[in-house]
Image (cartoon, rainbow, N blue to C red; front, side, top):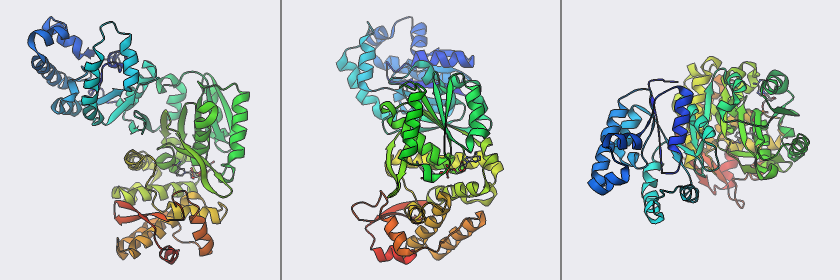
Length: 500
Ligand SMILES: NC(=O)c1ccc[n+]([C@@H]2O[C@H](COP(=O)([O-])OP(=O)(O)OC[C@H]3O[C@@H](n4cnc5c(N)ncnc54)[C@H](O)[C@@H]3O)[C@@H](O)[C@H]2O)c1
């Protein structure tokens, strides 16, 4: 953690800035400044008196001066006044010298919290402020939803952010941190409370991961059980889900139990689906163990299982409480799985972050950097449109997986799908032959396939069962240019067949 950096907590009144700020300051052993208290101490008056006697403009001036003074100091935990960072200059000043985190809560929640306060402002007054300030607050990158959460839990998210975690803003408001680094699994096991985890935990994993990581983890956690399922995509189905429900009931899991998905995308999707549905939803933590699940499936909240008729046909959106990515676990990942994860990294590079296409980064030693930058692409995608991700090559890939009865691993199917999407993009006149050749070279260099001998009619029919293919109308992601993807709808079947 950068100890010089200030941690600045802002947000509307009633979001808990002071309470949470005090906890954060205590945990980090840092000085805490509550801006409103500081202004009152210096002025010798309560804020309502300053407003009455000198007017709001004078108060805002005092606030501005204090922002400038505090921003230039180091290592503070600061709770701002509710309106302090509505001013864009104040926001900029604080974020130049620290990490700014906005706490938010729904209007109904704030109404309930304020009703307990004997000095509460008039509803008409604060509700007008609430609406007027929404835009300024929303422009702050780090958002933490406080509704229904304890101050300790919120403080844990702030500590993660201050420690360099990435943050995903979820569609319902609020969001969750993604921690990336070496040794995080042990750090988590040593102090699950620091990760906002208290109470009963059930780790869901598979028979391969259990002896390597899960059994140790469950032993180290104070109140944890283990559910082990069969390994592989063919088991990502409702039968396995049913088995997990039965095990959870037998273990006495209730709505306060946290489900911890420890494994690749299959475990993440399936355990996530269980967490979304068991007792109408229980908290979920994602601990992805494959490169693919680190850079893609653990982020964004899409969870689900396959039906014999198609992949991921049953599902839900379930945002995790946090994602913990310990890059050390990649040491035991089979090489094929590393390559499969690289297919998703390359996809992210092609659609948004060409820097990921630099071969010197494709080494396990560079995993932390690679994962961080690839995850950021996924975050940007899910924040822009949480429900329809730009999944280059995936509809082609799903068609391969389905028509080969999942004999081809997901990542290899994505690589072939990416190549097909590149060819389609070229045929549509968006990109040139050179870029197509470059994409092929990159995939080959990683050791990924770019084509497959399949019955094209079966392949096409399997693609047409994809969820994104609505009412028989095709919907495919193409490359408009390197670093830019777009969706094309309703292409004639012969255009698609031509690249298959
Ligand atoms: N939800 C989403 O947004 C999303 C996005 C992409 C993919 N997916 C899904 O993800 C799944 C594919 O995920 P995957 O590629 O991670 O496959 P996977 O979960 O099957 O894992 C691949 C293999 O690696 C093993 N493994 C995992 N971690 C290991 C480790 N650290 N050491 C040793 N072995 C390890 C697993 O046991 C498995 O045998 C598919 O079902 C796909 O549909 C979901």
